[in-house]
Image 1 (cartoon, helix red, strand yellow):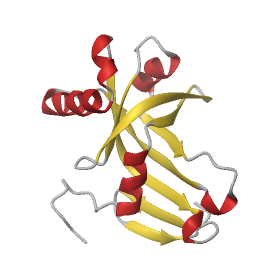
Image 2: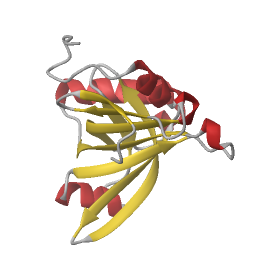
Image 3: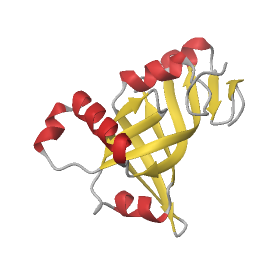
Length: 158
């Protein structure tokens, strides 16, 4: 299913809907063989298949983005009901948005989180390269896999 998306394949609408419904991600970095993670508010840019969030350059993860742009993360629905478990694990490349993308990122972020206008924000964007969406409502352990090269569906142990 090819569309005009700048080279990436369309993301399953169930994944898009999940990203849009939630607003906190956990992002993981690794530098010098030492992992780290942090939680951040985000907004999903569907046209770019990217996540925009804010974090100060002085934070550990902010400094580590500059040393290793490859990141992983997750967005999860908290529930005690096994049949309703849903969540996303992702990989991507993090960077500071520039030019037109900086304006688009800022506009989308401030629209979702207007209170951010009151503080100094440093925006980051994760260009997604891999997404695994688990949705137990579709069947126990049911996963939808999307990669930059092609979408897959199945329950692989990925």
